[in-house]
Structure formats: structure tokens, C-alpha cells
Picture 1: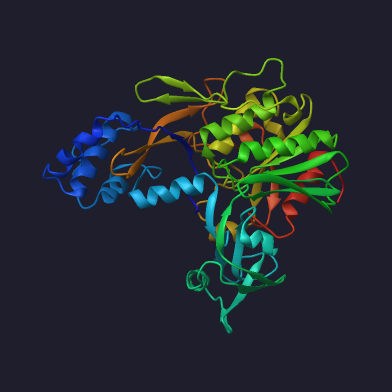
Picture 2: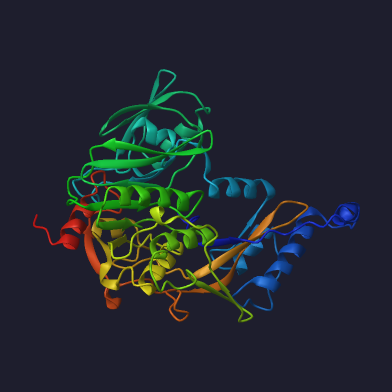
Length: 445
């Protein structure tokens, strides 16, 4: 999961003419084995669409996956038919399992001295979320069928979860308590909003979206302020965002903190639709949310595919601040670009995580005080007969101003962005949010 979201994906469906069915026997009798046939098709797509130059002396060795991994960039991938079905299901929001991401933290690096199996993400509307588990908890052990398993490594937790059939109940013991849960199929939600008095969660039942309001809230937020987290640009994220902005308007809030921390990206159309929620009521909004430039020099402008009513659009003049970090990539950076180019925010409204040394020592690739810096787009092509697919880097992304690209650099302090101290990327009480709120609103500790 760590890198799967760090791209903007544009699906290009290949239409299957009726005549192709008559050609299937020819394919089967051409003498090519499955690997050779896949390689020829993949090589054709690479020659036609891949953005970067490739060495002329490249050779086909091993599997198609080996070839793609050897010669193409880190964002390009080959999927078998079964793998691609799973990719499509995940990107649409259809999930199966517990709904958590995690890492193992050794002693001596985490603030406060704790160590062990650490939850870095709990997916909205997942079994884990409904059981009460939250990101930032340390999971010490699990119980299933009368046996207790202690988690002393990343793999020990993975093996524990893999060994439990779907829909079987089990218990996870964390530093916050014991949780009874199970693995099952669910529809992920990607947005969450809270004020100082209430919170709104997005849930799904029978493929129908519901906004659930609960009392409570985050005490660090001042009156009139709302915090809205966006986890991925997948599934119904744009519709969820629009529904929560409608609640924002109904609550007569006057300022918004948009959290894009650890949001690695997603789909172009989802990003474009979310962008128009923030720019739709501006008098001189730019016509696109971004621009893709292909290797032949042609350009494609990202236009919204849905239109939200005024009640689901942010009103002009609302103060917006953005939280980001080294995990904010691709579609997240593109959305920020749209907000900046349309005057919804300024660079000085972007607050980027400044991590502690302990976090940086364990995450050597993290760009401290800077977003990830991915301004290229991947397009996915699926074989119309055999079902396998190739995801290729096909374009360089520009912001709506047609000139700005952050690929390889990201957003940083030299542009005017501000920083916020962060002990870790995710903590249970989100201390970083409290610090950011103080900076944004000029509050004392």
C-alpha cells in the first residue's frame, strides 16, 4: 500500500470491436506462448505512450514484469488479469479485509519511548474503524480460537491476520484497549470532518452513502473552524467531499483546515471534481484543474466530470489552510496547485510537517519540510481479450496556470510554505494538528 496511491491515474478503456471475437482462434494458434504474446502487446504500448526515453539496446529477459521493472520508472507496472481486477476494485472503494496499514517501530525512535506494531492508517468505514481502532495505536497481541499471539514484528501481525478466515471474529489488544473485530468486504470512505462540537463520518450500506453526525469534536479547533481530512482520490471521494462541504455550509463555518497528510494521490477525475468544489463559486475560476503534457507535445486539460450544486461548494472568501507532508503526492499536490492558481489559498497557507529525527531515521526517504514532488501521470491500458494491463507514465503534469510543475521538487519553504513540528507522521491524538491550529489562528498554548 505504501506506493500504490502515489500517482494520478487516467484509465483509458480500449473498446473491443465485434470483429475481434472472430480473431480469437487466430491468436490462440499463432504459436506465441502467453508470455511472448503479453510482451509484444506491452512493448507496443510502451513505444506508443511511455513518456520517458528508453535505452535502444534493451532486451526481453525473464517475465514481462521483470522487463517493466528493469527498464521503466518506478510508477509503471504490469498486472496480470487477476491482479488488475483487484486494482480496479480497490480504486473504486471496494475493499476486503480488516482495513488497516501498519509498521513496526523499534525501540528508541518513537516519542515517549513506545515501540512495537503501530497502526499508521485505519480506513474509513472498514471493520477496524467500526470496531473503534484508530491510527496511532500500538497493537500488542491478538486472540483467535482461544490462542493469544504476541506481535513482535511486522510479519507476525501479517501472519496472524492472514491465518484468520473472513467473517471470523478475533480480538486485538492495543495500548488503548481490546477490540473485537473481523475481516469482511466493505466500501471504503475517504473523507472525515470535525468541528469543536461535532464530527461527521461517511459510511456505506447497500452501496448507499450516509453522513453520520456524532457529538464531541476536537477541542483544539476555535469556533467557526472545521477540519476536513481527505485520505485518497479514489471511489466516491468527490461525492463525500461535496456532502461534507454541504454540512460545513449548513454549520455556517467560516474557516477550513484541509488535511492532505499521507495522501498519496489517486485519479485525475476525482481530483478535478474535488477541485471544482473549492473553485466553483469563484467568479473567474480557471477552466481546468490541471494539464497533462504528453511526449508528442499534445496537452490534455483536466475538466470536472460532475457538477455539484452551490450548497455543496465552498463559498468564496472562506479561509482555507492545508496540511501536507512528505506523503502528500501527485493528486494531492495537483489539488493544492489548483487552489493556489485560483487564489483559494496562498503558499503561506500550506503547512508542511517538520519531522523529528526519530521518524526520519526510520523513514530515510521522507522529504522533510517538503511534499513528495510527483508531477507525472500514469495511464492504464487493459488488453481487451486477455485482461492483463500495463500502467505507464504518460505525461508531465502542470498546474492550471500551464507553467508550474512540481515534479522532482514538491512544495517547500522556499516557495513560502510554512512548517509544523511533527513527532511522527500519524499520532493517536494528532498533536501536530493542535500545533497547526495554534499557528493558523494565532492561538497561545
